[in-house]
Image 1 (cartoon, one colour):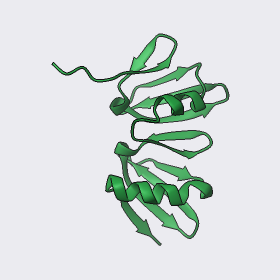
Image 2 (cartoon, one colour):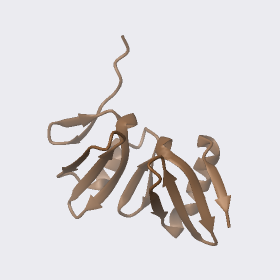
Image 3 (cartoon, one colour):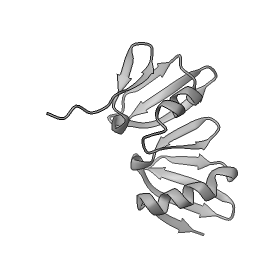
Image 4 (tube, one colour):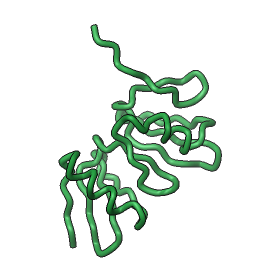
Length: 116
């Protein structure tokens, strides 16, 4: 039986990275959203969680958000603005400085890119 890696997300909480949908900063806390709809608020900064999840397919879309690239359906680019559409049909803003790197990653991840 294969044991899948779990990552410490805060306190005594661990989660499999593939179960995470997105993470959002809340000052010195982070709101974690799971694929199954569950949410949890942890007393761990998004920066520390980004480091812990760096070896998995997560991307910092802006200063306050981290998304699981396996949960991104498509990207929408309009000029210099970009949004990522998640599997929940939620649209996430991508900061201007992070657009080009995300486009490069989208090619490797086979994420559809629509330019308007």
